[in-house]
Length: 427
Image (tube, rainbow, N blue to C red):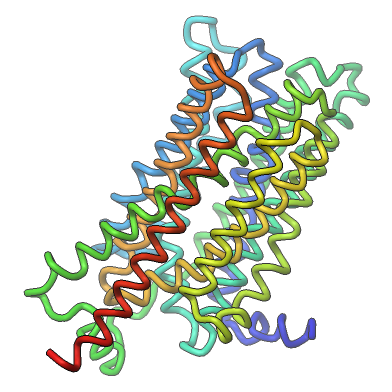
């Protein structure tokens, strides 16, 4: 069974594998190590939830704001050049963060906000343009498998980064006479992470551009999907708007969990940094097998069916975080929600990219990731403000409600589109 699941990876070409290698390096830091340590580092610098929410919101908002131009540029320029630009920008953000603590007090806040914004902005350029690159660099038979492997690599890198983020500060503290209440172990960890980002940026230089033009068969498929240039305003643009709105709501719950899980565990439940990192790592690790199983789930229920089921399961997993004040319940909810993200992301990405022609796939991917970034930013900034007047329970329930709305909206779109296809022959 394991050989059957992993066989598509062996069938992928070297360029796809190189894409995955760079993705692992960037995700290890930006979505693994930073997700565990950035908030804890800010707490050790005596900043409250309002400033923590601001830092997260600016970084995630930058991801959202950069995703749309990344998609637009990807429709007109080389996606590989934009991916390389994104990897280098991530490196720049990683270099600046360990230096921010040494800035004068009047400048330190800006110095703490800018590096995550640079990192997430660069990550947006790589991630957005990576989607159309990957779907066109692999054979048609392996498209779902390729995106399942992308989600698996994302989860595995997040697991490794989260685990490293949970353990490395303690090791650094014990070797240098610090405690985990000091900011120094976290700053040193961020400095060491620059090595990983530098390797990823160097590997990105070896990614080769896609062929300049699609095959005749692919062009015919593109024309069928797009319906011709005259239908742009009424067809493709409307699809992009609909999917953007759906994704905005769809990821809100998981965004709330991923941004505030470590703060909730540290400040409200008084859980150790090592345990927080371990639970975050387990959540990412469970996303690996679920992602690898996604192509086989899609074969049985289709991409749309898998999106609906995984979205609803992720929404339900958030309820224990809101309703039970215990680290086991919070961990169970977080792990369940994060594991379902891999399934939903794989099926949803392949579904939306199949709706538009190749030349508009970068724009579709960029709009979707812009919505995701905006959703993360909204929940990060809004969550920080909400926690100043309400509780973590209220925040997690709000995220659950938004995710449920996104699931229902996608389900309604699928029903309507099926009805239109049934009626079309009669017109």
